[in-house]
Image (cartoon, rainbow, N blue to C red; front, side):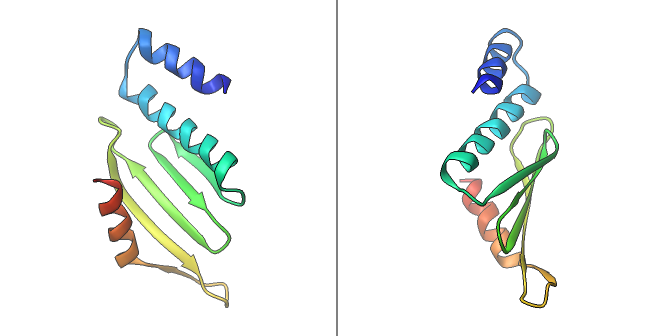
Length: 99
């Protein structure tokens, strides 16, 4: 993947947290495309992105200075079309990803 290779070269010559976060984001996109058909990923900034499935959404925020996971919110759709935030599952996923 050209974008990932270009970011790796940039990171080798001018290391930065921003480039590291972008590399991580591109790797997630690549994984989603290859392994998880039907899962979409949207980036609102290098440190904020959303994973969307058929009936769920996961909002992920990374710390701008370190690129580490800062917060995560899991929401799912009910049959009537309303969305519910699942705080327990959000906390569980956050704990798992921070290990």
